[in-house]
Image 1: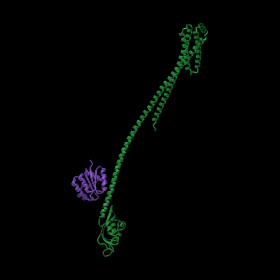
Image 2: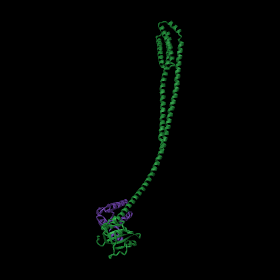
Image 3: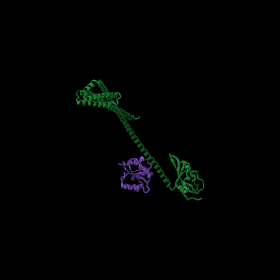
Image 4: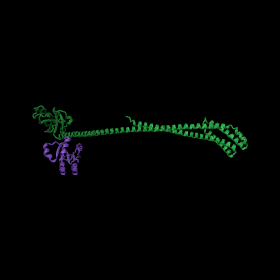
Length: 384
Length: 120
């Protein structure tokens, strides 16, 4: 069966990586959002501050103008000029801060127009007062309709401030929710990763257990196999030893038989008398070297030939035929020895020699199976 | 300790077969092919048993046995030969010179039994 542990563990670690990446991406994106929001918040706070400062400088300029109209004190004059200079600065800053705010930038421009109008009126009043025309100044102030306009400017400034503060509050709520989401995301990711790690650990623990069991089973099987191999090896070794012994016995028996046979042949071949072995039918089956030496016939020429072709009974001294036609065959059939029978031995050149034949029947299990014949010379070879 | 056997035979195949068999059965075998080698070996180290053929190429086995007996009179000698002796000859002549006689046609296990008996 294919091992599923490694793919499963790898899949779990892959999931862990996916969760980690997802949490990291989410957290980084929220951090980026927070950083971007931080810039916006700072700009918004600056805008709110500038609006407050703008309102304050307008109020200060208006107050200083009226004091100077009464007192003609140069310090009031300077304060008035400073207040409207500040107003101009605040307006420049506000224009810069709201440049990207398409909805509110035109309103700031309107504020600037109105504020600059008030500044222009203030400069005329200051110029008239400095010229010593006090009555004219009072008349200008009495005829001034800009007070209501200033109140409208103040309301617009307050309205803008409120809108920005509402946006900041809304932004705070969104940031809180975002932070909460980030916390939940991180903690959920951490929890999920711990769960996945626990799953991987459990799979590995179970796999190790299976592997230990498998190793124990394998070890047991190996032990059993080794034991069987040892037994079998011992059996084979014993069988091999037995075969080797049997082989030695067989070779020993063969060599002993061959040795004995060779020795027997040596004994027969060493006899100087002529020795022949004949079958029961009277055919020559073996001769010793003395036969070949005396007759000139070699062994192949005589083997399986009738004995009568080599030796025939000698006629009686008076020339009469022998009383028994086949004394050798008769003695073989009777199973008796035949001693010193005069016979004529024929040699290869056709000459004949008178010899004495002695026959010993060969018995095997009390049955005559052939005979051993010895021939002894009695006279010189007669040449034809 | 393993028994030491001196094997004397002029036929190498006999020495080889019988030597292997005896070594397989736990004996330390020294094989020689001549009577002179046998006497030299016995002079250097007396074996526990001598197994010898009767007919050696350059010497007579019984004569060699006499020389060995002069060096190591207590060493038993097993005569292993192709010559078949009459029981009377064995009893009256051979038994005076050798410890035991076996024909070479004797099975190896029977030879081993005789060797064990002689070394017992």
